Image (tube, rainbow, N blue to C red):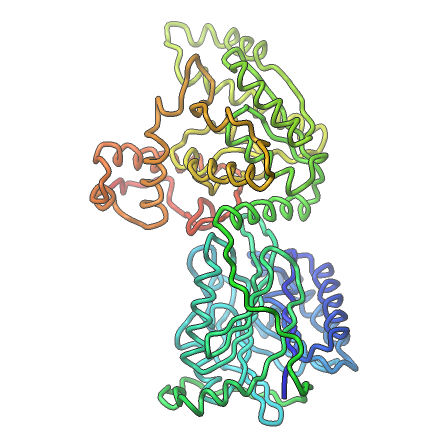
Length: 571
């Protein structure tokens, strides 16, 4: 007996219950046309993931339950078994999987292991389930679980496999960060081998606020084979599998005999169709994509979905002729099309001729719309207005920040007038150290490269030019020293350490959790490490007020980073 699995790797929107259900019904129809026996949707498909405090609304929970019934009715007369993520309710709410067959809700599974780290807050909302579920038909046993359940070594897969599961199906919503797909694959292969199990894993794709989901749904087998769906694309991933491979492996290896049973199982008995021979088997090709490629795709998808799902059509950003705004303009043009991107040049008396030329050439190369609005006269009107108050003081960063705030004001005026979403262009290195102006260049609806260090900005820009086969971003933008151009002959390195050193220190502290002493032991000077960490710690109030940004790293500023502003721990 061969089972044809369909993994519905779809882009869903949090809160758009009707839209999500329509997409589910579309994929059920696609599964019927592909003669799929078991169709698997991702975690919390009906509500979208993560629904956050929408889960505190009883009307939202009830609407999600009505939607589940609608989908169940749509399965009437179909041979396909459908597994669908939703929120169940019995006085408490549960992150759940519905088992739908022939117009009925044949069974439910409640997620047992609720993640409460990184960007996850599931213990805030859900009660944990307490009973693994097995679907059984004529000697075929299928275990159903949800995302984190598989990441825990003693999760429900343990009891499901002891009970003789041939196939484990996992509904997931696993956010992207660079190289995480390798961790997922290694974890799934480990579970498959230690439990002699075939595992089908279905993930969502798309952007949701700060998060991006990369898909890469997969099937793994106990002998180490794996088949992976596309990255960052919707897909009905269809694969035929002999579920009794697991049974034969367990008879040969006998691993399950040594495992201790943890809890009682619930069994759902229903009929499952099958095939006589394997006909659909996607090639098991390795994903050899560079980190630059997957990071760039994640940023493009994250921005595209943020704009689309929030009802915007066009975006605008300040074009300075520097690297950050150049990369953001490239990402925006890829995500939305050049016609929907407006670059705004806002030169001052300190803006170099070269920067204006570079910004103009970039706009031409990308074929995006360009506006030029000088800030010179407005800047001097500010200085004149403040002249009496600032009397007998020296010119300093105050006057520099006024320029950035004028530019932010211009951009927000354009947003108000034309309904454009403003893209903030600050990178992670700047946001970490406070080298960005609150209410100035931090103004905007989304900070596209908020989770991209400055050195990575250059790498992504180089990658983009390579992919396009020509210098979209002008060579001079790569060659000239980074500068905010807010005073004569200004360079970033007048204030900050070289970015290679700065970014290395920041990564060790933010993403690896090393202390100042431990970072120094990695070969960095004590003075420069202390300086960088002081900048990081004293600018928390700025980060708290910044626009959301797209997460691509292991630990991003936002939901991943919850440091107190008032903080006496300064080690």
